[in-house]
Amino acid sequence: MGDYATVNGQQLYYEVHGEGRPVVLLHGGLLTFESSFGPLLPRLTKSRQVIGVELQGHGHTPDTDRPPSLPAFADDVAGLLDHLGLARADLFGFSLGGLVALQLAVSRPERVDRLVLASAHYRPDGYHDEIRDPALQANSTRMPTADDFRDMVTAYQQVAPDPSRFDAVAVKTSALVGAFTGWSPEQLRGLRAPTLLVFGDHDFVRLEHATEMAGLIPEAHLAILPHTTHTQVLRRTDLVAPMVESFLD
Image (cartoon, rainbow, N blue to C red; front, side, top):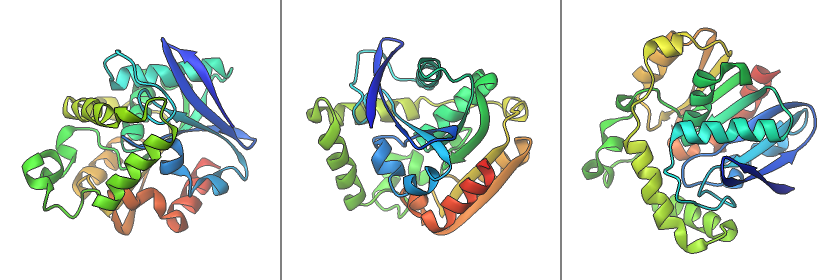
């Protein structure tokens, strides 16, 4: 199922499943394509060509000395589209993958048809204080549990070229998110891709910020999943799958 594309000096791992109109799936930080989208894959591949990407240092894609950044990751996705001979595609990104998808929609709108952003914010203050402040994270019920974190490590070590690099990738990913400055309201107003925004009601992202995004992005649709934390969003296949299928179709 998987292959590598040489893109911007990276050996970018990707998988292609199913047939039909292409949708690129972009995983969350410290996750793999499978651990992010595995539960949704059978539904999405019924009528779509699903292209799963693993970003630099994640999953099967090796880490390199290149400093990770949203523009670099978005350029990698655009390069993969070139590699596959695709002028445009739908994008479905979760968390970090949502930021990458939004970066591509802002910087290269001609490459993006429809946009699904799950648990992605557009400014640093879009996160709750307990997510942004390490001193508050220990007592936060929004943070991943010990079992969630253990599953992240296991999924990484099962497929990574160097299983010992999880901590190093975690430090880089944390620094990337910490340096995130976001986009301006004008940039969101300038988006032309029809957009579906999906959040949990107990997510990292403040609900006020979610509704603000929905108000700024033209043709935006907003979904709030009940009784759902950040790590549970893509596991709610009962709610997410029919919404995404309907929106993309």
